[in-house]
Image 1 (cartoon, one colour):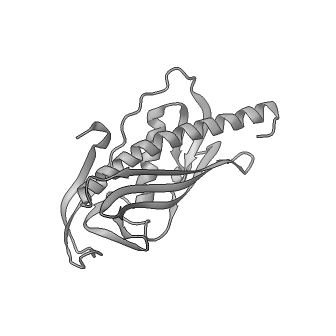
Image 2 (cartoon, rainbow, N blue to C red):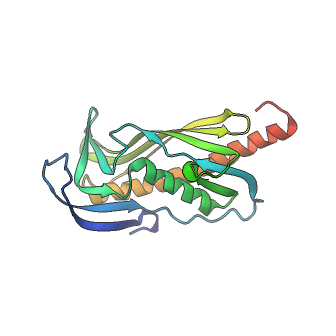
Image 3 (cartoon, rainbow, N blue to C red):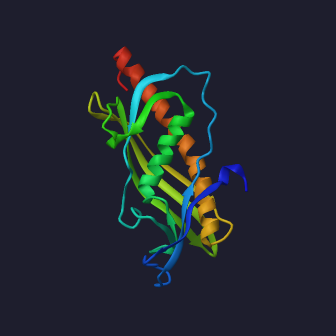
Length: 213
């Protein structure tokens, strides 16, 4: 399997009496965790002194769960009955984003917001979509989220952007779905890291020069 699409199966065949929304049956399921590729650190750029805290994305109750969501139609959300994410989707995505910043290496201090550490900036997210979408028999992983960069020193939002990433799945089965999620995540996270660095540095320049952002 391509390195960009590697997946770690954390546990398989866990015998839990979990409700399976598609089949209504009880039984075993596998637990999946998409992997983030190791990024090449930006060695040519001096490390950034400001620190960043990353909040857990807010999401609807349909997405804030370990279930892997699938939309077989535009107005219907179901789940794969024999599979789970390692953590609820928002928490899992937050962990991958923190990992993306750590691998990038430009910002010296990055941690989760609930760590209790101080930070100059924080990232807030609204996770709008994190599901497989099936249209005319073709499936794709879709991740859409709105991001806000918050300057904690001035108590204001300095930048915001909506990110949307889709990746085709080879089929509608759960294995193909998770591979597609891995591809979408590995495209989205580096874009998010670059945007945050650029927006934060632009705001730092504005603070230093007294210019309006």
